[in-house]
Image 1 (tube, rainbow, N blue to C red):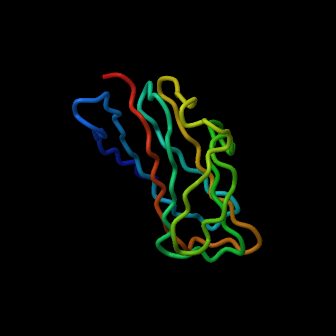
Image 2 (tube, rainbow, N blue to C red):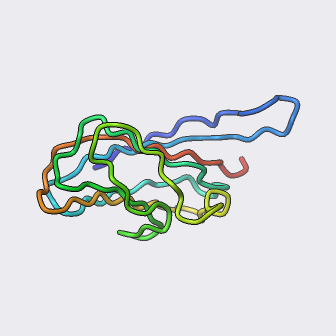
Length: 139
């Protein structure tokens, strides 16, 4: 079972100016020895928007190809299209639609669906973390 950790909100900007609050949540990206490993992130109710998603591969994955995608439906890629996370390193994901970060205000009890896809050789070797940065809704 995946673990989701929230931190923040963090006030960004000049205290005398209109400030933007940012918060983050993280998800462990640990594959199973299967073609697809499905994980979920339970987002807080009423967030104003997802700003950025970043994956940090800490232990290289050993499948032939290893990608991650993020959607608003199970197995979907409405938020982030499939991109390789096989090698150790950092991937700053591109949101599928221009301006999606501003437009992705999720309804109450919204879930982001994360799928790790392995082709040819599938293993349970590899690890990483996905960080989702978002603007919380009004308190």
